[in-house]
Amino acid sequence: MLQISVEHSEIGPGEAHRWHLVPLTGADGPAPRRMTGYNQAKHFTVAQYAQSVDDPIRSYVAASFELTGQVDLDALAAALLHLVQRHEVLRAIYQPLAGDLGCEVLTPDEVALKHVYGGPLETPAQVTRHLQEAFQEVDTLSWPLITMGAVVRPGSTTVWFSCDHLVTDGLSSAIAINDIATAYRKITGAEPTAAGEDRQPGSYLEFSRTQRRDNRAMRADDARLDYWRGFRDRNGGLFPPFPLDLGVRSGELYAPVASTEQLLTADRIEEFGATCRESGGRLSMGLLAGVALALRQLGGPEVYRGLMPFNERGRGVYAESMGWFINTLPIEFPVGPAAGFGEVLADAQDAYAQVQDHSAVHFVKAWKLLAPAEYASLRYWPYAVNFFSYIDCRRLPGAEHHLAQQARMHVWVSGCNGILHWLHRTDEGLFVNTIHADTPQARDVNRALLDGFAGVLTEPLAA
Image (cartoon, rainbow, N blue to C red; front, side, top):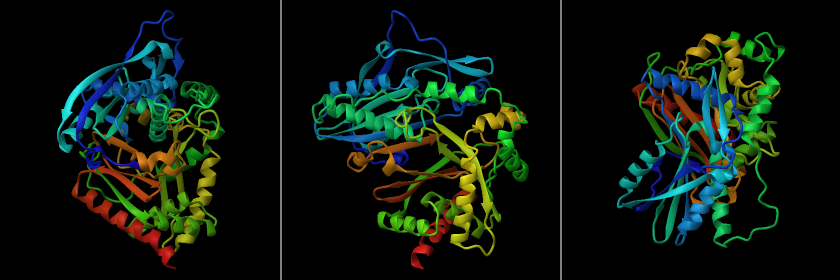
């Protein structure tokens, strides 16, 4: 699954169709109020405050994929409805509480889809504009938090959906694509249905309730926060700053610049992974070591400090659940002036093991307890923050179909004050999706950093 902005996706013209999620009046009404996740509560509160000061911060997490042949619109509508009925986080109606967020959940029988024909889209530019506008319709403070549609052509169809971050994360995009595509194949008879294979995924809201309960008694002096306190004190705050000058002014957001490019071919990333394993490290930590070395070569510090996302689903009941199952954790390790790749990889691997030991504490909880003033006042990251993300998309649900389906994830933010790199591996190799602030320095730094990073990755392969 390639992560790429929609304007770079080359989706062909066709007939536009939309399906709007609508509630039905149920006999029993919505389920009792449920607790939401840490990420959800913070995200919703930020959106409320941004609206109150007339300074909205918009974003979406969208995806698209291709169906070949003449589409069956009724079957596609049923497959899209199946997605919403399968994941209760998409059926939840979110309601603010005193400094928090709750929700009520519609049952699967209390939701339906309303079809709207949008007319012809005659050029690729019209398709791009249509999708950009449709993707941005999702709004944190309004229900529904998912919008769905298709661009239909005689020989193929592009299916798309867009969610507010409140109900999704990047891994959820692959889960949703797999759910829709699998349901469509079964409904149309292209794939048989085996008895008992459609097991319901675990509830993200139930996961959130358990996580909240386990951390309810935590206070600022709790020993479980020792790692976070140490990082905060050494770093000078919970948010590690991006170590190079991007020409951004404090407190300002800039127009985003997005791009996706390939860094290594499939063969080369396989060779790099083998090199990492021979050195006793994971490929992901080899990539992180490469980023740290590239930053140091550009004048960065001799200690790498950054934030990295952790998937909290595990391999059990939540493995194929939609929701915001992401914790964000700090990591730090030395990058000495004479250190080579193998040494930095070993230090990164040790640091990763230490982070894993403290992953039960959620970033939002630590932020609220250890930096309460920032927690209450910040609507977005306070400055350009150092951030590392890597996903092996070949391991995601439905990955065996990604290449044939041209599966794509589209991430967008209305404003940016730094550089975000999402490294991801597909069947075709290693790619990076970038969003950075539109300043001359940020453009130059991003180019130099990616070139330096690619150089660090290929150096061990040439040895």
